[in-house]
Length: 533
Image 1 (tube, helix red, strand yellow):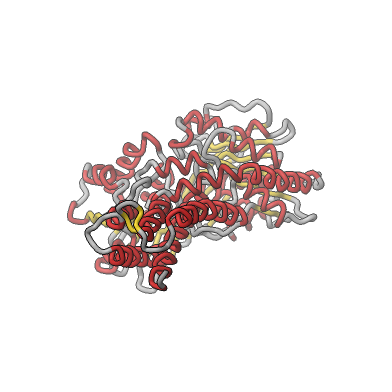
Image 2 (cartoon, rainbow, N blue to C red):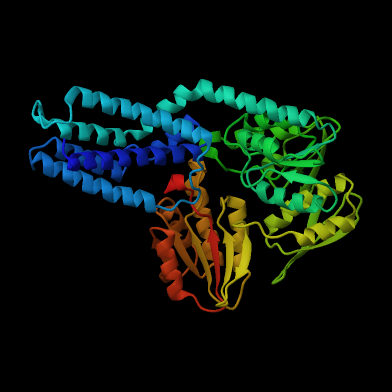
């Protein structure tokens, strides 16, 4: 076998391994759940453009259009180009090479290698013919076929590793449970909601840290394994309060975390149409979020946002229920009003159940942030913090990156960064903040919202209406929601000449560089996750 042929096999083998890596990357972003990963595949990823090119190469390898050597060389060149594209691709959330990833990678790679070696044993590397086909080219075509169906090796690896993963997860679960059981004085605060939970977690952590030794789940560690890792690696014997963010995409997810941490109290920030593709209905969303309230003991309390009809109408009778609101304060125990925005942030008042009013000033902007702050303030008051300490904590809160955070560039342009997981309520508020700016062009850059199930078109059209009412320039990124966003924008008095439709954020940046002037304001509303690119 020639060195050239060996080189060609190495290139195609490396291409297969990179395909497996990408599939595992998407699997990780879908919480290693086959059902979610399968849903991603059904969105046109079974046979995308790249896989169709691979199929064309297989036909070439098994054809007589060129000599076998030329077909193999052309295949290697195409694979080299695709390897370059894969290695230079940028992702919003890169693959984290955990031990589990390495286990899946090893098993998936081993399965594909076994098939490859079986073909080699059957047909060899020589130039002999396999029927009408060249032996080496036939083996190459098998490698490409494996690259086309690389997702199947990943799924098979997950299934084969289930007993192993179950045993490992149970071991970690028991260790985390033992740590928590050994800290009877620890107070656990659960936070969940369709949106606002991460911001509320950060705000509450800053406020409570004024008086208590406080730990919160970092980043987006809001899954059972994320919580377990936080407890095992970050919990200290002297920790007094553990703020636990709880994420969910299907019924039972919140209960699973509650069974682990046994929350003493909780916050439900919102019940809205998020992750409808996995929940199926808004009722399932509500029932799942309220798994937190159901888990709080009688001597605890739960703080619930009444601005959302689905949460306001849900009764809680197993523990003390404290309700808060801004836009629908009717039955709320606490409410925020007199909200005033300035270039320095926001000033607002909190009305307590006894009629007393508290004054707060924060660097944050937007009604959604005031709502999240209100929930955190209520918990701090319930835990016995003084009003002065809470006010000091609120004043120290920094903007959470990519969640309606603001900055001003040296060129005099204001950037409103709301790029993390846009939702119907938050996006409307972000656009209202954009609309409040005067003196320059108001520009919105967005790909729209995702994971809205059957309401995706409806809610993105409404988002388009809000854009048309609050922005002077709109840049629609990606094709995923382009039609519904455009329809909503053009239903208003928006100037069609100021509507741009681009393929990606790089193209959006080029347009921005050509139209921006000092005094302009740019809102980045959402950034599609990698599974939608």
